[in-house]
Amino acid sequence: MKADELRQLLVRIQNNDDNVALERVYKEYFSRIYTYILCKIRQKEDAYDIAMDVFLKVCDYSYPYGQVQNPIGLIIAITQNTVKDYFRRKKFCAEVDIQSISLHTEFRDRLWVADILQILTEQEKGLFFDHLIWGKPLKEIAAEQGKAYITVKRSYQKMKQKIKRLYQ
Image 1 (cartoon, rainbow, N blue to C red):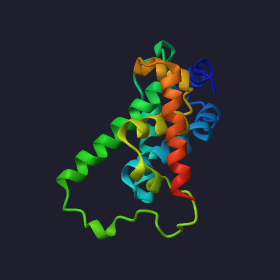
Image 2 (image 1 turned 180 degrees about the vertical axis):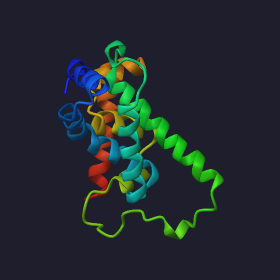
Image 3 (image 1 turned 30 degrees about the horizontal axis):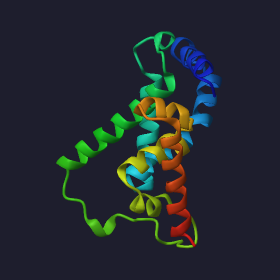
Image 4 (image 1 turned 45 degrees about the vertical axis):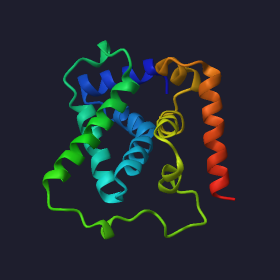
Protein backbone atom coordinates (compact mmCIF):
# COMPACT_ATOMS: atom_id res chain seq x y z
CA MET A 1 0.00 0.00 0.00
CA LYS A 2 1.39 3.38 -0.98
CA ALA A 3 1.72 6.22 1.52
CA ASP A 4 -0.94 8.34 -0.21
CA GLU A 5 -3.46 5.51 -0.19
CA LEU A 6 -2.73 4.80 3.49
CA ARG A 7 -3.09 8.49 4.33
CA GLN A 8 -6.50 8.61 2.57
CA LEU A 9 -7.69 5.54 4.46
CA LEU A 10 -6.52 6.98 7.78
CA VAL A 11 -8.32 10.26 7.03
CA ARG A 12 -11.51 8.27 6.31
CA ILE A 13 -11.10 6.39 9.60
CA GLN A 14 -10.49 9.60 11.52
CA ASN A 15 -13.34 11.60 9.98
CA ASN A 16 -16.04 9.05 9.39
CA ASP A 17 -15.31 6.03 11.57
CA ASP A 18 -15.11 4.14 8.25
CA ASN A 19 -14.99 0.42 9.06
CA VAL A 20 -14.11 -0.56 5.48
CA ALA A 21 -11.04 1.68 5.58
CA LEU A 22 -10.09 0.32 9.01
CA GLU A 23 -10.39 -3.23 7.73
CA ARG A 24 -8.08 -2.49 4.78
CA VAL A 25 -5.44 -0.91 7.04
CA TYR A 26 -5.79 -3.79 9.51
CA LYS A 27 -5.35 -6.45 6.82
CA GLU A 28 -2.31 -4.69 5.39
CA TYR A 29 -0.45 -3.85 8.61
CA PHE A 30 -1.61 -6.05 11.50
CA SER A 31 0.66 -9.00 10.70
CA ARG A 32 3.67 -6.71 10.32
CA ILE A 33 2.95 -4.94 13.58
CA TYR A 34 2.31 -8.21 15.41
CA THR A 35 5.50 -9.81 14.05
CA TYR A 36 7.61 -6.81 15.04
CA ILE A 37 6.15 -6.82 18.56
CA LEU A 38 6.50 -10.59 18.92
CA CYS A 39 10.18 -10.32 17.99
CA LYS A 40 10.65 -7.72 20.68
CA ILE A 41 8.72 -9.22 23.59
CA ARG A 42 8.53 -12.94 22.68
CA GLN A 43 5.13 -13.55 24.24
CA LYS A 44 2.29 -14.26 21.83
CA GLU A 45 -0.63 -13.14 23.98
CA ASP A 46 1.00 -9.89 25.03
CA ALA A 47 2.17 -9.24 21.46
CA TYR A 48 -1.41 -9.60 20.21
CA ASP A 49 -2.74 -7.27 22.91
CA ILE A 50 -0.07 -4.67 22.15
CA ALA A 51 -0.78 -4.89 18.42
CA MET A 52 -4.44 -4.21 19.12
CA ASP A 53 -3.42 -1.26 21.31
CA VAL A 54 -1.44 0.10 18.36
CA PHE A 55 -4.56 -0.01 16.19
CA LEU A 56 -6.60 1.71 18.88
CA LYS A 57 -3.97 4.45 19.04
CA VAL A 58 -3.99 4.75 15.25
CA CYS A 59 -7.78 5.15 15.32
CA ASP A 60 -7.69 7.66 18.19
CA TYR A 61 -4.80 9.71 16.81
CA SER A 62 -5.69 13.39 17.30
CA TYR A 63 -3.41 15.08 14.74
CA PRO A 64 -5.07 15.32 11.29
CA TYR A 65 -3.86 12.43 9.13
CA GLY A 66 -4.17 14.61 6.06
CA GLN A 67 -1.17 16.59 7.31
CA VAL A 68 1.00 13.55 8.11
CA GLN A 69 3.86 13.32 5.61
CA ASN A 70 4.82 9.68 6.29
CA PRO A 71 1.85 7.65 7.58
CA ILE A 72 3.78 4.37 7.46
CA GLY A 73 6.51 5.93 9.58
CA LEU A 74 3.85 7.15 11.99
CA ILE A 75 2.49 3.60 12.41
CA ILE A 76 6.04 2.33 12.97
CA ALA A 77 6.65 5.04 15.58
CA ILE A 78 3.38 4.28 17.37
CA THR A 79 4.31 0.59 17.39
CA GLN A 80 7.81 1.22 18.74
CA ASN A 81 6.53 3.59 21.42
CA THR A 82 3.82 1.15 22.49
CA VAL A 83 6.46 -1.59 22.90
CA LYS A 84 8.59 0.81 24.97
CA ASP A 85 5.56 1.58 27.14
CA TYR A 86 5.02 -2.16 27.62
CA PHE A 87 8.59 -2.62 28.87
CA ARG A 88 8.27 0.40 31.18
CA ARG A 89 5.14 -1.10 32.72
CA LYS A 90 6.80 -4.50 33.04
CA LYS A 91 9.77 -2.92 34.77
CA PHE A 92 7.53 -1.80 37.64
CA CYS A 93 5.67 -5.11 37.86
CA ALA A 94 6.80 -8.16 39.76
CA GLU A 95 9.97 -9.81 38.50
CA VAL A 96 9.53 -11.90 35.40
CA ASP A 97 10.30 -15.56 35.77
CA ILE A 98 12.86 -16.27 33.04
CA GLN A 99 11.63 -19.85 32.72
CA SER A 100 8.17 -18.63 31.71
CA ILE A 101 9.42 -16.87 28.58
CA SER A 102 9.17 -19.17 25.60
CA LEU A 103 11.72 -18.73 22.84
CA HIS A 104 9.93 -20.58 20.05
CA THR A 105 12.13 -23.66 20.25
CA GLU A 106 9.38 -26.22 19.98
CA PHE A 107 9.77 -26.54 16.19
CA ARG A 108 13.48 -26.46 15.44
CA ASP A 109 12.99 -27.48 11.80
CA ARG A 110 11.24 -24.20 10.95
CA LEU A 111 12.65 -20.75 10.51
CA TRP A 112 11.84 -18.81 13.68
CA VAL A 113 12.46 -15.13 14.05
CA ALA A 114 13.73 -15.52 17.61
CA ASP A 115 16.48 -17.84 16.40
CA ILE A 116 17.46 -15.41 13.67
CA LEU A 117 17.62 -12.44 16.03
CA GLN A 118 20.10 -14.27 18.24
CA ILE A 119 22.72 -14.38 15.47
CA LEU A 120 22.23 -10.90 13.99
CA THR A 121 24.05 -7.74 15.03
CA GLU A 122 21.99 -4.72 16.09
CA GLN A 123 22.54 -3.11 12.68
CA GLU A 124 21.40 -6.29 10.93
CA LYS A 125 18.35 -6.51 13.19
CA GLY A 126 17.37 -2.98 12.18
CA LEU A 127 17.76 -3.89 8.52
CA PHE A 128 15.77 -7.09 9.08
CA PHE A 129 12.87 -5.20 10.68
CA ASP A 130 12.86 -2.31 8.20
CA HIS A 131 13.12 -4.37 5.04
CA LEU A 132 11.49 -7.72 5.76
CA ILE A 133 8.83 -6.78 8.28
CA TRP A 134 7.96 -3.18 7.38
CA GLY A 135 8.65 -3.67 3.67
CA LYS A 136 10.89 -0.64 3.17
CA PRO A 137 12.99 -0.78 0.00
CA LEU A 138 16.75 -1.04 0.53
CA LYS A 139 17.25 2.30 -1.25
CA GLU A 140 14.97 4.04 1.25
CA ILE A 141 16.80 2.41 4.17
CA ALA A 142 20.14 3.53 2.70
CA ALA A 143 18.88 7.11 2.40
CA GLU A 144 17.60 7.09 6.01
CA GLN A 145 20.92 5.78 7.29
CA GLY A 146 22.98 8.12 5.12
CA LYS A 147 24.78 5.20 3.50
CA ALA A 148 25.36 4.17 -0.08
CA TYR A 149 22.76 1.79 -1.48
CA ILE A 150 25.41 -0.81 -2.32
CA THR A 151 26.60 -0.83 1.31
CA VAL A 152 23.11 -1.56 2.59
CA LYS A 153 22.59 -4.17 -0.12
CA ARG A 154 25.83 -5.94 0.87
CA SER A 155 24.78 -5.89 4.52
CA TYR A 156 21.46 -7.40 3.52
CA GLN A 157 23.19 -10.13 1.51
CA LYS A 158 25.53 -10.95 4.43
CA MET A 159 22.51 -11.13 6.73
CA LYS A 160 20.79 -13.59 4.36
CA GLN A 161 23.93 -15.74 4.29
CA LYS A 162 24.02 -15.87 8.09
CA ILE A 163 20.42 -17.03 8.15
CA LYS A 164 21.04 -19.69 5.50
CA ARG A 165 24.04 -21.03 7.45
CA LEU A 166 21.93 -21.22 10.60
CA TYR A 167 19.45 -23.57 8.95
CA GLN A 168 21.76 -25.74 6.85
